Figure 1 (cartoon, one colour):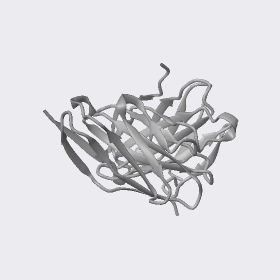
Figure 2 (tube, rainbow over the protein chains, first blue to last red):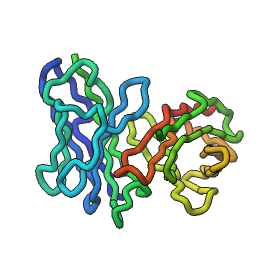
Figure 3 (cartoon, helix red, strand yellow):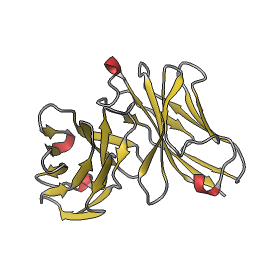
Length: 118
Length: 114
């Protein structure tokens, strides 16, 4: 069965450094998402991406964050200058987006990347 | 505003006994509701979903949930717990006003005692 994959599984970085988290969504899916979960807190939506552009983003997704689909398979989340509070598990998800009804579709999640900012 | 409340942060049951994980939601739109499970070091896996069809939804591994609009609830149940059910469970809401960004509950950790 197709899966969403994420690399690396764990990333340790120094405060102020740039990090890029990588995801390979399920092929033929149209909508892509990033979520994060700070330890002990809820999973929070960051951004959704459709047709090569951001379709929706949360307040968390400020100018330090960016997303890109550099080729036909990868979907990346970049944090330009990491802060201590960016330490979290980051999940990528994708959904078929059939008939444009993204809100009823099942989102398929990757295993996550644990980001630790020192 | 849209929100999800999971009423128990931790539930402990004995193997072979029923499981009940409680979830209440708030939504001014017609919601889609999901239960996801997360085993340690694994991604989030869909158990079941409700999208305005039958109110009793059956999922994988013997789990089911009932959508009750009058009670704004979507509780997850299983008649008989198995050791492999030990995991964290998330009740999740989506709604027609969004592009699919999910709203998560805080999660319920299920422990299963032998």
